[in-house]
Image (cartoon, rainbow, N blue to C red):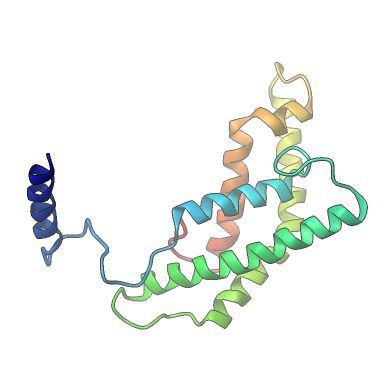
Length: 169
């Protein structure tokens, strides 16, 4: 099996070398990390619907500290993912189109929109509850409706799009 694996590996490496191959992204600036964006969405969901997702049972000073910590982490993580996305959208082989400072400013602007997005999401919860005669409560809508997760993700992505952030998976 080892010999076979080696032969397959050689053939794969040969296919990677194709100059017209758009199915590999080797020796270039890193792309935004899908896994990191999933973590970002998880934290954003926790901030949009506290107590339903993520850490539970927080109040008062502990809640303030937790939210502040989450926002600090989001600032750092989003800045890096925005920088990577902008660098890739600019030109794969050229220097980054957005500086670290600019990416950080974009992330900060996005995060400043979270209270307004949360207000809009509250109307989405109302609409889903009113529009579904089978819904037993708004808590049920928040905690178990995949459509609300999709709408939340869209609303967050739309804010990034308005800030001209490309390619954040």
